[in-house]
Length: 183
Image (cartoon, rainbow, N blue to C red; front, side, top):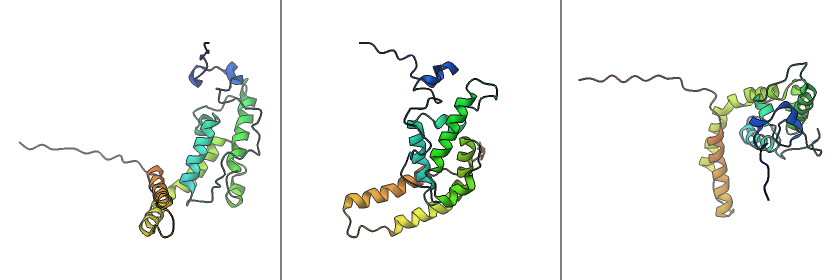
């Protein structure tokens, strides 16, 4: 039996394919604004890195990450897919706000696009990465096995290491090195 895989990639999809489950604007019948994509709530800079990673995985699984990152651009006002894009955008905003504490989400209720919301959260919490790296380094230095099993101890330690690895540096190096060779 042969399966037709002509629509496996969103790169081949057109506006008319928005009914395909592979299209980022497709909404499943079980998708609704009250859906909780992840159980972890964003509480602030202390858990932003792990929250962001969990949300990216969940949004990618829902095929909505391109909308959040802005890779799937907002259509023009007169576009045939404008209403569908707005519906998806509002759904994603709801999903993100559902995973943020009330103290944080109350100030974000009037952000218009999921992409703007995502950028706002990144600007607000990723700039504290240096502080978070310091916190994690202290946790690693103070971590003791105590009464927990070696597996729990190891996974706790590895979780700290993984979070440090995943934290995005707010600045990129633009250094230029020149080498002067002497004869």
